[in-house]
Amino acid sequence: MPKIKNLSDACKVSFSPDGPISEEALERVRALLDEIRPLDLGLDNEAQIARTWNSSTRQQNGRRGRGGPNQYVPPIKYLHILESESFSMGIFCMPPSSVIPLHNHPAMTVLSKLLYGKLQAESYDWIDAADPTDPLKPRPARCVRDREMTAPETTILYPDRGGNIHTFRAITPCALFDVLTPPYSAEKGRDCSYFRKSSVKEPPVVLPSEVDSSEVVWLEELEDHQPPEGFVVARGLYKGPVIRR
Image (cartoon, rainbow, N blue to C red; front, side, top):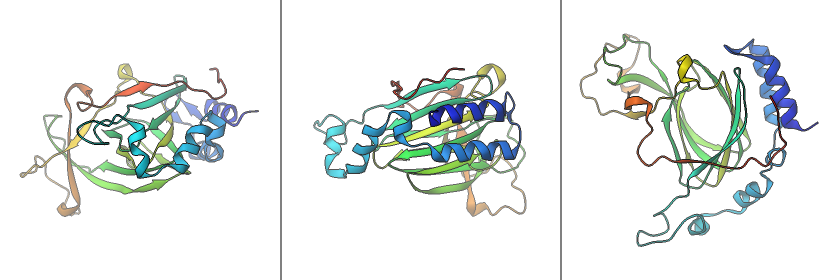
């Protein structure tokens, strides 16, 4: 049986419309995700390109114009695999220098596996403080992760910890396989919001006494759940084994 089918079957019994049924069930899914390779998802050729990539080949990934080889970065591609009311599975294929901007996963648990390549990951969790009356006002957050990731590597983030707000920048061609439980749903209050770092001078909320203000990063939400200008994700073709709901 294809490994992706084993993973899908495990997700069906381990996840509910409210997320993982237990920590043990989540760990079972993680163990199966750890076994997934690019070959299991029809991405062996792309992984091979990533292994031989170096900065001198960057111009082959875009158009060379007056601004030089970095003038154009091809869009990120999303390969949809499966979605149910309990979970979704998909892959983000990122060209070098492409960025998935700072965004969140409200009330969701997310397993991510870097299948091939290398990226810079930066993630944050909210600091408990009185919410500002205006949801678009800056809120305090703490950096959970700011480091380079090299495939293969699997991470888990939770609704309120583990770096639920994060951003990725591709260093080489790379692919990130995401399993979300439950999936995004605007109707159920799980719409994706985007954020930017704020240069706020006067904090709009009072920080807890135990929080070191020098470690605080202030984040402000972009309006109407809209991503930053220029962020484009194209639909790609998933070439791995077909998985049915």
